[in-house]
Picture 1 (cartoon, rainbow, N blue to C red):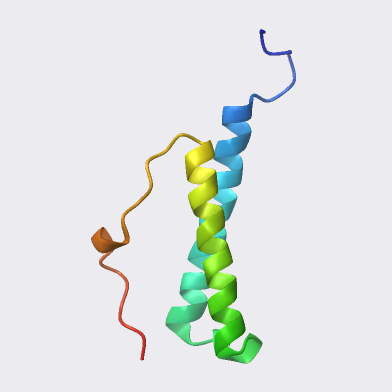
Picture 2: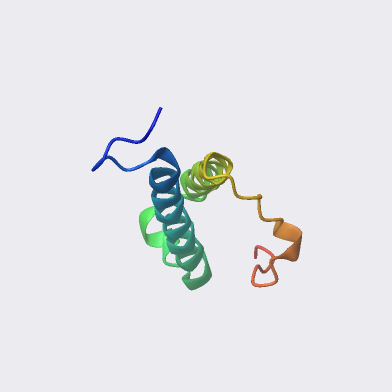
Length: 81
C-alpha cells in the first residue's frame, strides 16, 4: 500500500522517537555525571528511571532498524562511586 501524501511514514516517526529517547538518555547521563540527580531522586528511583530510559532507547532502536550499541564500547562511562 503506498504512503498517503502528508502522512509521515513509520520509519521516519520511529527515527524521531529514537532521537527523543536518545536525548533523554543523554540528559540522564548528564544528571548522573554532575551529581544533580541527588536533588531530584532517591538512589532507587533514579536507578529505576535510568533502566526505563535505557529500555525505551533499546525498543526505539529496534523499531527504527538500527543495531543496538554495545555498552562495552562506550568509554565515557565511569564506575559508580
